Length: 205
Image 1 (cartoon, rainbow, N blue to C red):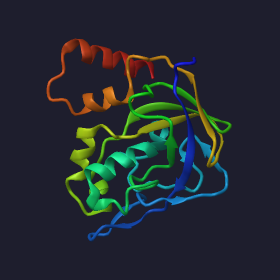
Image 2: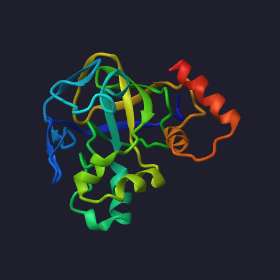
Image 3: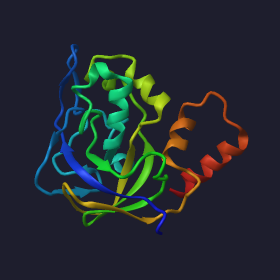
Image 4: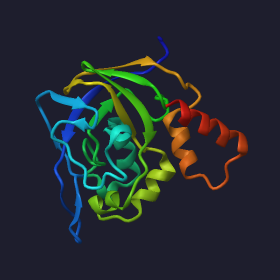
């Protein structure tokens, strides 16, 4: 569809579990850029690791994507971390351009390189985001600004590389932009109709 967004991969990143922060918490938050094409399958990018599979990784969180455009907003709102804001700063696998939490919807089917991915949910920030920056206020800031990024499952294995186009092939849930679900996750009061719509969405994903 002509009104669906289109994007591009500007960085592909993988990481190994290593100590993070002053307490040396096990985490694969720090991810390095990969110049070569990377195989992607059911549980994510080849060579990428997660320390806690209860909350990161797995089938529905195989690949974490983040909009490069969001980093300019972070630099503006949190200039004390200006040296860090940039591709890989929030631990993403794919840094993208041309897409956002407003323009992508839950359930969108994406072609990236020769792989097919599907958007599943926004990222819910945890304490490791704070450890990465040495700033305990950042997780709450991500909740407020909605710059969560989005997780994807892998529908068809393939390879992904820097510069690959990102094309939306299907949009089964146009009423559910990623930011709407992110706001719902942290809302204090949710009306019954919205909750019913949310449960129907999850059943169909």
